Length: 218
Image 1 (cartoon, rainbow, N blue to C red):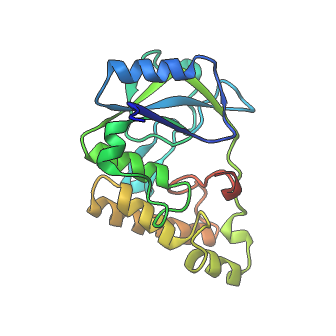
Image 2 (cartoon, rainbow, N blue to C red):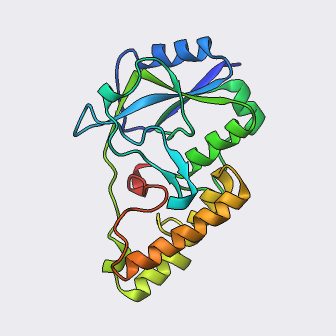
């Protein structure tokens, strides 16, 4: 087999009957692009789910816009800074150029962000096709670190690489997906500072990449 495109998606997604036609149509119209579907939430079907992440060094890295919905987004394909990997059409040429996802270094949900950024650095545009509709389960968040015993927090931060807040995991994802190494280092430093503030009850907002769906659902 010599496919022109490959589609990767989560196995718990619910798709519109025309989603694949829309993805392929967009890819044929824009042959230099990786194309993501419009992700929506199961429980609030018009609310966007992890759509159009934005890099913001001052806030610790990738940020997920929280207030987007089906009605507020363009009706035609539009460029984005990154694509969450719940449903993405990859040109086979891009996969051949970059290789497969690095499961050894990134055995967790951040691998999709790292992967599309590698393609972006290779010259591929990132587009979102808002007419390709896919519904996803809302994220399941782990307990906040400040609610856990100190020993458990230290294990999470320093020992458990599969936990969303593990420091090596957080550093590695930024290092591999940031616009530059300098921005990766700065964002990680800010992330650590924000974690420290949250630990003493000062910080309120979530920091960095959103935690994934529970690891068992990847």
